[in-house]
Image 1: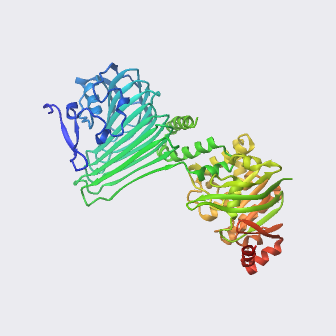
Image 2: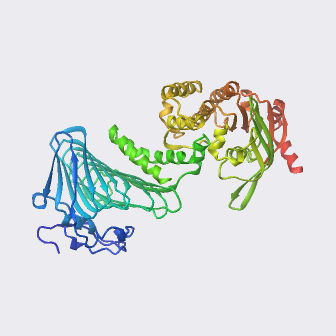
Amino acid sequence: MSSALQEKEILFKSTDARPDRIASSNPDDFLVPNGREEEWRYTPLKRVGNLHNDAKAEQDINYEIVAAGGITHSILSRDEVKTKFLATDRISSRTQSLWNKALVIDIPQELETKDLTWIKTDIKSGVQYGHIIINAKAHSKATIILEHVGEGIAGVNCEIIADVNSNIDFITVYDLARKGVIVSEHQFVINKDANIRSLVVQLGGDVVRYVPRAKFSGNHGAVELLGVFLATNGQFFENRVFVDHNMKDCKSNVLYRGGAQGEGSHTVWVGDVLIRKIATGTNTYEMNRNLLLDDGARADSVPNLEIETGEVEKAGHASVTGRLDDDQLFYLMSRGIDEPTARQLVIEGFFSGIFGEFTHPELKERLNERLNAAIERSHK
Amino acid sequence: MSELVIKDLHVTVETDDGTKEILRGVDLTITSGQTHAIMGPNGSGKSTLAYAVAGHPKYTIPSGSVTLDGADVLDMSVDERAKAGLFLAMQYPVEIPGVSVSNFLRSSLTALRGEAPKLREWIKEMNEAMKEIGMDPTFSERNVNEGFSGGEKKRHEILQLELMKPKIAILDETDSGLDVDALRIVSEGINRTVERNNTGVLLITHYTRILRYVKPDKVSVFVDGRVVATGGQELAEELEANGYVKFSKATAGA
């Protein structure tokens, strides 16, 4: 059982279909998974470098930061950091108990900046754990990019805390080398009238498992969780989204677009939205669309919506998985465009809407370059 | 001077009930600068002819030949056919989400001409062509065929025809779903293409209405997967008066 300093909360009560889903800071609250558990059923545990069992840190994680003017950052040890982070699975909880240095970013009250803040973590060979805290104070506005590269194995969690009326764009890019492994839980806490717009981009790595979890600390908050992933050459990318509507009149929008190409390539998207009894006036929508680019690839998509109050404004969910459309390719090719270019155009078009949401030109350009390179890799 | 020659073309498709033969020996020749109207009832195989010649993967060609100036069209991939000078205006143009009209047209012309058009000249060329077909310049920023009305889709097809300047164009029911104003604009586009680029046109239609605006040099009647009669404009007039009944009977008895 947890010690006095540790906390535990129940997110989902058990049903016939599944046990209690809990959040805790104590790894012993989570058994070592064997792959049959609901939350691990898709993850290739043999490929996660024992992060789920007993992998020890071989080094500290390396953070590089280029911050926009006015935004401060520091690297702190465990006893210097106050965190309310509660993990929802075994790897996240081990990460939480094993990191040595955390990166803390503070966006001061009323600071508004259009400049980008880039955080880069180079996951070196071996095992490492990290923790990042982003504190956006009241009425602030900023764009933060967290980019993971490298070929090692890492557990890296992140807390994004948006205070009253703040406005945060937060982009996470997973572009590791082919053998890189990373497992992350990101917790978004949205206060009154605050707005977090988050985008995750998964392109590189052997295994990427990403668990974003959003909850509200005031009424009238809004969160957007957007995602783009493209698994090729046997890559495994997993997204497990949880939006906890625990306050009144809040809004959430979850849109993920994914693609998979090549033998053994596998993507997973599980979207859980819970509207608690207290959360009247909720407006939520979640949607996952996947494009299977050939017969060897697989996409799993599971939307779940649990509503405990009758007074919601809007609640919807959808999931569509399909193949590249022969008629679209034929149309383009009948205009002289060769097949690889036609595929590239259709796939780029499929993903284009999501980047369109982010208007910062430099960022959009860089993300598009990365994605287009990944699409090009996919048909070579 | 170009010539598309279709000889004894047989085409089949796979259905739930097995292989079905749709074209049963089509013979046709389309020549530069000439307009050849193909008229026939629904289900006669007119669209199949168009798609099979353009190379849609759904269709199998067990026998027959299609050549463009002597080159074997059936041996070419879909994009090679376009590069060789063939164009198909589709009855139901496909929506391509996330791909803008301007990106699409530029990619196409880059492929057809072997080099990217210079940006400044390209924008001028596209805007002029759009103006002629009565499309607002803002169309270039919209996604290909997405949210287009029926008339807008057909104008977009003719816009492509005018920009791509093919040797031979197959127009599959370009007139269907158009009101009379749109029909006139689209027809003018077809006439311009024949006149300016000396394009040979295979005009597939169900109705004689378009033939008031686009004057065919030849008219063929297409029934049950083949050409059953060929003549001049007077054949279209006869069809308008009497319909396809006579020709359907002719095949049934044959």
